[in-house]
Length: 489
Image (cartoon, rainbow, N blue to C red; front, top):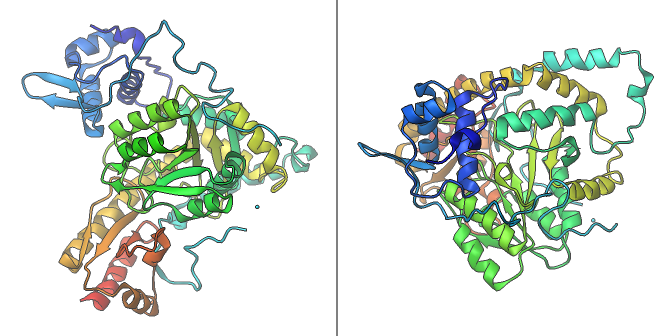
C-alpha cells in the first residue's frame, strides 16, 4: 500500500475543509504520477485510520473525487483511479521536472527589454440584461470595502499617498493572495510570483506583448474569449483553433498540431469556458501539462470564474499541478466584487513577473494602492470569503430559477445544459429563429442581449448566445424570459 500518511498533508489550521485537503492531496499525487490510473484506492476505514480522520471525511473525499472524474466507484469492489487518465511516469531519483519553476519559466521567454477595441459594450442603459456574465452589484460588499478604504485614507502616514516604487502591487495584497490562492486553489507560490493588474485584460496584454514574436502560433478554442484573441492578433500572433466540446478544449488536437508546427502558447479557460461554460476535464488537464513540458509552450490559464461553482468543488486549476513553470495563471476580483473594481492578478515564474512588471510601469505607473490595501484587509478578515459564500447561494438560486423558466416557457425553441458554475447559460436557439430580428425586438422592449457575433471568431454562425442571469433577481429574470417568449413564440 502506498504511504498516504507521507503523501497527503492535512493542516487543521487552514480554513479549507479537511475532506477537500485530502481530495486535493490525492489529485496532486495522481498528477505527479505517484498514484497510477487503475489503482484501487484503500477502503474508507483503512484510509481514515492512516490519515487519522473520521471515516465520513474519507467518504466525502472519495465522493468529491468521483464527481470530478478522478476515480470510479465500482459496487462491491471499491474505488479505482480512472483508467482513462493519461499515465505519467514518476521517478524521484531523477531531476526530470523543473525544480526552480518559481524562479524561471518552463517555456522560452525573452528577458530583454502596440489600441484594442473590445466588444460586448452596450450603447444604452437597459433595465433588464442578459449580459455576458456580470455579478449583481447590489449584493457587493461595498460597506466593508468602504470602511477599510476610509480607514486607510484617515491613517496618519503621508507615504500612503506617494508614488509606489513597486509596480507589482501592494505587498499586503500580494501576501494575502499567497494564502488565499493556496487555500482556495491549491496554488503554492511566493509574493514575488504575483503581479497585481487592473483587471485580467491588463495581464493578458502585458503577457502577450512580451511573449510573442511576429507569426508565433497561439492555440485557442474555436469558440473563445474574443478580447484575448484580439490582443494576440494585435501583437502579430497567429490564432490556431481547436474544437471545444463538453470536456473543454480538444487536447488530442493540440498534440497533433504540436507535432506539425511550433506552438508558442495555449490559451485555455479551464473553468466555465467562454462562451460555452464547459470545464476542461481531469484527463485533458493532465495531458495538456505533459504536452507543455514536452513541447515547451506556455499555458495561459484564464480562471475568471473559479469562485462560482455550484455542483461540487471545482477541479483545481492547472497551475496547482504545474511543477515545470509552464503555466501563467490569471484571475480577477471583478466578478467577486463588482466590475468597477479593477483589480486582477497574474501568477507566474519570477522571470516572467519581473519582465511584465518592467513593461507595466510604462502603461500604468502603479495600481490603485489604497484599494489594494482595503481588499487585502477584506481577505485577511474573512469578509471576502463570507461574501462569496452568500453570493454563491444567491446565484445558484437564480440559475435554477432561470433554467426552469427556459425549459417551461421556451420549451424546444432553446437547447441548453445547466451550467455547473459561472454566471451565464450558453443557450442555443432553434434554427427557425432569426436571431438578428429577435435581438433587435427584445432590445426595443428593454431587454439587452449579446449578439452571437461577439462570440464568433471565424465568421461561423453559432446561433447561440450567453445569457447572463446573475445580475438580475428572480423577478427580473421572470420578466426577461417573458419578453424573450413574447418575441420567439
